[in-house]
Image (cartoon, rainbow, N blue to C red):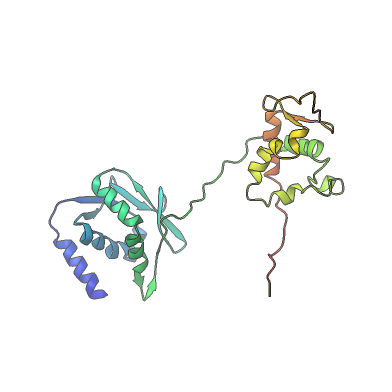
Length: 241
């Protein structure tokens, strides 16, 4: 393996000047030796020289960026195309390909793999916090929702047994979508109206209970309050013996 690495390095240095791509890369990847392992292999396959530059490159491989490429040491490294050239696209495609990902995973130090490919890794995008008035939302929640749901300590014994509490619903992965659109989820459409959003109740189907009426600002406030509610502790999942 060391002999192969030496051959690749010597071949890379002896390559004639020609097609090349400029790469901005994290110092971490340089220090671990990954770039020395990886880039000559790309050049050997494509005859495209990779020049590492401190800035104004064609591609950037760093701790932040657009596309996850590799991970290791608790860090994900991302690729960003800065200049759309044929050579840059070729290197980007190679890094994200099965061959490139295997090349990353094959890099070892002291006999241990350092990185693994991360192409296709789902990137969690931070969701913007609700913009409503959480204090007003708490008051609305107890007044409008508390007749059926347990909202918090103040109405622990007053909810309808068949309806989930706010803290339980906060454990749902899509809790925010559910609350933002609760008025279209059964059974709410039969007794809920949002000013300027929902249609009036038809005369032939009046609400069977006292209607729940609110504005869009009220809805924003409700969601902002629910964001402050601690999810219920459901305990560890059951383990079958």
